[in-house]
Image (cartoon, rainbow, N blue to C red; front, side, top):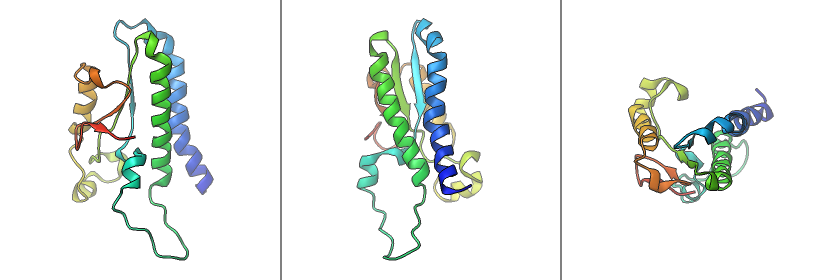
Length: 156
């Protein structure tokens, strides 16, 4: 993929796709007796966290490596979308969250065994975070990014 294709694909999956899916199923969501809308975000999406990161800047000159900029930027954009859905659906009684499952040893980010060696946690932690939202244990924290590691609320 070209850089443009990679950026467009990441935003298409993480932002546009999530928005279109939510819009499409909104009539069904509004019929629920306890409507909940959950977006899956990332600890890498926090502007505050990134600005206070301990990562060192690269040396002067070219080439520059940007790491996960595409992914981080798209997840940050998705956070804004989640905030907007929270605002738009507030008077409809819809509870909205973004859930940051954490760095987990899933097949999504590569080989799970390699990820474990890099410090990735057990995938069940992400499942627990989502289950706690679905079961109502995080109802007092709507409109926020919730997680089950570090502090319970991720800064924007």
